Length: 239
Image (cartoon, rainbow, N blue to C red; front, side, top):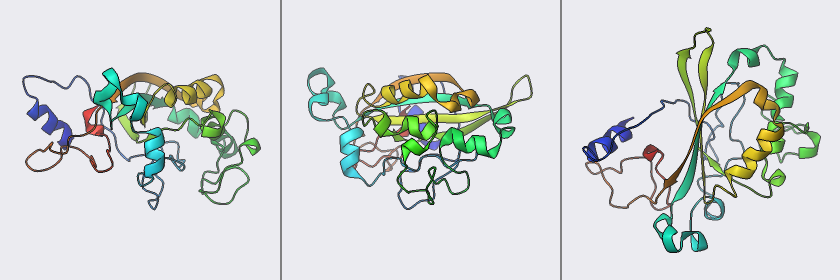
């Protein structure tokens, strides 16, 4: 919120905030040693996310460079493309679902987040042991020709709707060097068969071009968002 206020102040008279979504409890950690956060369904989210310290994978899948940053696209050199989605989670329906079915939907156990047939969260998943429509199996890079995205989502809640159901879910944020080879194949796979679709509803979606942060951008001496210009980390505040 502080970053958004500063960006709006700097651009006063030329830019304006058109829409915002307040989130909490960051999902999909990018810090390898940090505990994986849980989403509103109670499952850990982002176990196999791209690590913020893995520069090789970031260069391969997240940062725009080389032939993707030539000609008219040169201004995006070092930046990334962001897919933002507001996903409502039908919490009440999920809470009435048995634990066994919940674990089948995700392809992981709820307590440890271990893949089916494995003991620990970070064990390599054996996809064929999971149900064909499990979320983890369908979203895995091996199922989608190697498609990989960097997720930095947040949970949200906006009270209740007219039917007294919780208005809550996931504000999904995914960075990649090319949406066509990142998010699109993964989402296509999920849209076709993901068992999780019964419990979620995508209510808003957009794609943003996020240029590389300026090394001199400051707000009173501080970079105006959570950017790391050495790692070319895109500013989530600019969405």
